Image (cartoon, rainbow, N blue to C red; front, side, top):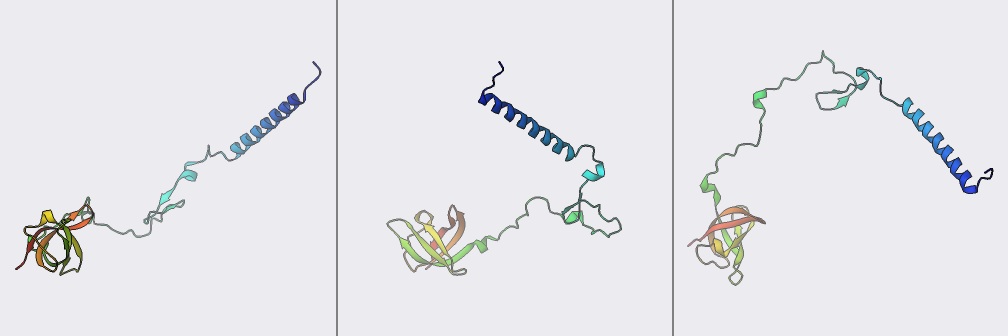
Length: 150
């Protein structure tokens, strides 16, 4: 029983080292412990710009007055759009009868707007003058209620 194997000695040394490390970590935790600190040490203040600081605000400083009635809650209300503003004029820059789609160049914005054959009241071809309305489609603006101008 007096004999110890090499593995047993190593295990004992490792165990003593782990106990020593554990004791050192415990001492370090006790030194850095925040328990027992006063309320003033834990207090944080926020200034008028939303920045956090550890000093209280100066009570002699003049504060900015805010009119609570001017604060808007929720989304802005939309003003009704005049239906006459929705009607646009343009020129057919490209239209493919076989595929049933094309593009109209808006005269006001010079923007190319997609048009599908389902949104036509009559057949159109390239360089025709048209009147149309714009709606938002899944990939951008789409011309609807397209009427060929004479």
